Amino acid sequence: MMTALEATPTAQVAARALEAARTAVDPALREAVDALPGALRRLAGYHFGWWDRHGVPEAGDPGKALRPALALLAAEAVGGSTNAALPAAVAVELVHNFSLIHDDVMDGDETRRHRPTVWKVFGVGHAILAGDALLALAFEAIATADRPAGDGTRMLAAAVNDLLEGQGEDLAFETRDDVRVEQCLAMARHKTGALLECSAGLGALFGGGTAAQVAQLRAFGADLGLAFQFADDLLGIWGDPAVTGKPVYSDLRSRKKSLPVVAALSGGSPVAGPLRDAYSGEGELSEAELERLAAAIDLAGGRAWCLAQADELLERALDALTMGGPLTGTTPLAAVAALAARRDR
Image 1 (cartoon, helix red, strand yellow):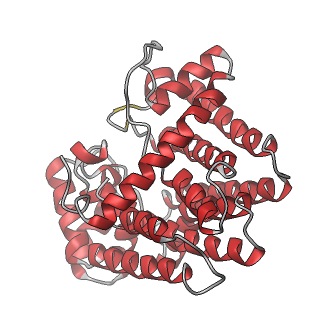
Image 2 (cartoon, rainbow, N blue to C red; image 1 turned 30 degrees about the horizontal axis):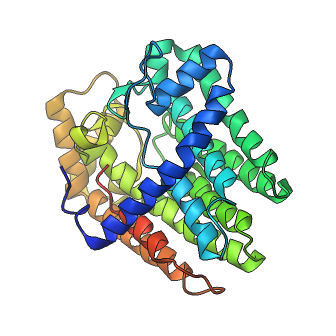
């Protein structure tokens, strides 16, 4: 069923752009995955939702295709073709899915896209190998592109290194009780913002954009990436499991120091006391406790602050589309950005 957000004209433009990106990228993704050795191919295809754990074809949820959409739309915005940017779109989607498979292992998440995660079905070791294989395929997609790939390879490598740094920071936060908001923001920029920045930048590069246009679209992607993480962290607490494919209060169950949590803990509000106590403790939290913690974050202002920050970052991202070199046809880019920053899944 379509939500109220998805029914708006802007959201419908975004939905068409995302669907077009998925249609364009999927054949190339399948071709890349088909080149993997048999066992890795089966794991990767399972993750993408193409078949079940036994390799029997089925129509699963392959994801939103946000990053490939940004790459293809950025190419069009600088006057290039989506076909020219297809290797970039494939590469960023492969990197994204590499990170998802590894994230699920590190976070112990058992569900993604309404089905058991790769590690839950095939084991931790096999999941790590499957993620590694997707990362290798991403760099192969750039290296074998028709145009000179040196700048693209360097941009993608820098984004992957930032992503890994962010993931490392996120893991380090698990054992700390002194995480500050600015540290959490820096982690989110690395872990999530870097790849969205790279997606738009690679698309502009492969579309033949000037250095100024590439920088402009990277600035757009960087702010959008952080807005996306704010939305993601809100969904990690208050998202509808039927829509997100993850359990309700999933981030609270694992005591994840997400942006709403850190904002609530840093605000000095006395209502955040139970939250601080729960995050200092151990053991499984009950459903009633999780519900109370979510309410405490809300009362302490964590939820409202995240919503306001996401809106501000979205505005900055949209401004970047108009405050630099000349771009054309940016309406779909703006629509995708609005949907990503205010999504419910």
